[in-house]
Length: 452
Image (cartoon, rainbow, N blue to C red):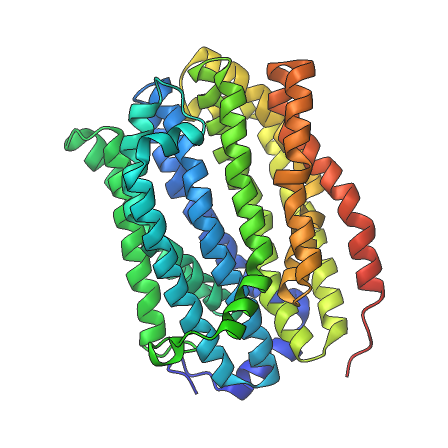
């Protein structure tokens, strides 16, 4: 029994006998709240930095590409280990769960430290590669420097957060994320205005909040509130276990890594039309991802359900959970998309009171909102395959939205339709991804075996 008062048998019974709709919602609500809270404190940076001018606002969009790289590795280790741990717990193998948790945690710390050191040594070239213009570069470097310093803590936090989710303890993960968010929202005006640090203050506030979140999440494990334990003894490097983590989490690395590349390319193409265009696309990305986080949060509530029940050979529950999650995502995102269409201009204006930014951003946001209707199926399909260990399918789907589909779509539409093509590129990629995913997941769901 863990210190939260839940025995292994009780946890098993909860995961395989609770009605899947109730279980997905129970796990999805705190996960969704965590996603929204995370995006709120990211949007706080966008809001407060937006008062410093278009170049500063554009810098947030540039550094978003760097944050996507850090998230890519964090999600790879976190989703990789979390999926395996959930299946091992479903099989009753606690010893393996301890080893996978410890190995992924240490791997994230080391990888984050390497990215931190390399990034600080080449900060200006890195910001240029990520799509910074000459006028945006000083702001991006000041902001990005602190994001790099926090990389080890941020990356390890993604691992801890995802392991908690896969264990069915999303509410504990929400506590760590929530406290960090509150600190960042309070820290932004303090460091930016009161201490007169400008955009560097936003970076420092974010870095400090990520460090605090890391300490809170780590305390959950050290205090024995989890089934899987983290210790240096269990972190002994094992090439087979490390390879399992990488293979399982590789789709997350691809998805987030390509997201960074996509952000970089989007900034480059938008930069042709000035800092206002870069700022507008940065704002739209933050707003759309905030709405997108609702579907993503519900989907992440689905992941531990699918992984655990697949490990326990309760295939009918995997099927029911998938269908319920897709339908719920469609309803929630549909409502938010309609509301967003009505208030598109007002939403963009909150973050940057500039006529040109609002004009460019409003058109782009409306394109993004239409594409929301096509996202729940693609999101849940990717999460399903990753959760149950269908690594090749998960990796293939991860390359579509931000890579194999988006990149050529961006190049073609930008060439044919200029700025309008840039505004519509990601939504068009989302629609194409949906139609590629649909037959693949329908075939898989139909062919799931009977329960054992």
